[in-house]
Image (cartoon, rainbow over all chains, first blue to last red; front, side, top):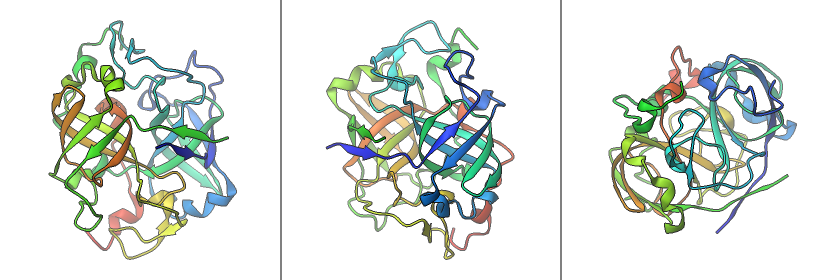
Amino acid sequence: MDFTISPIGVIHSPFGEVAGMPIQAARSAAAGQVEVFPEYAAGLTDIEGLSHLILVYVFHRSEGYELMVKPFLDDRQHGLFATRYPFRPNRIGLSTVRLVERRENVLLVEGIDVLDGTPLIDIKPYVPEFDVRTDVRVGWYETRSGR
Amino acid sequence: MDFTISPIGVIHSPFGEVAGMPIQAARSAAAGQVEVFPEYAAGLTDIEGLSHLILVYVFHRSEGYELMVKPFLDDRQHGLFATRYPFRPNRIGLSTVRLVERRENVLLVEGIDVLDGTPLIDIKPYVPEFDVRTDVRVGWYETRSGR
């Protein structure tokens, strides 16, 4: 059974191409604008109180996928689901960004790592009680070749 | 422009109904099985090295949405995108669970908070460097009425 996703907005970033883009939001200081289409703007009520947001979006330039991939940060192959590689069966990406300011239906954020024009499909509050885990093992990432 | 999502598996949990289900994975000790369809199983290679996974799934029982909602943990209304409420324009959910064991195409996990039969659309490694933020403010959630 398939499901249809309709963007609720668009993410504007300084990155027109993959080359030069930071590999993860946590490694990026880049500023971006998250434009929420006006018909959804009421859903942003109270969002100013949150310092961090999880953006859910489509890797819209990623066509096709392979189940074994060589991720950006390593020179060995790994199973796709053990990586954050953008070419996936359902090409959905997640990035946690810092909310700097809300201007009506536009959120100014820091720490963006997506291409300009990326379709936004959801915004969720980043809540440490839900989203932070301790005693984490990260397997291949601990012995990766690139940093 | 719309996008089509096709499940890559199904999540089995002890929760047949919303009543009695934990509100977030971090509050749940429940065990579940994440069944990845055999054609995607090769993508699980190396996943055993990861202690925690982010499950991306469809809130398949959540039809419709409102932009102002009263979340489970508060008795005041908030903008939908400042909450993790499951009735959303694109009803995609995220849960971070602990990986206990892999048995071929099935992952035994702990800390599940989804309904039995939930369609799985992606699995991503939980990587503290990417996913953990500090100095976080959580707005209304800090003064919520329910805990």
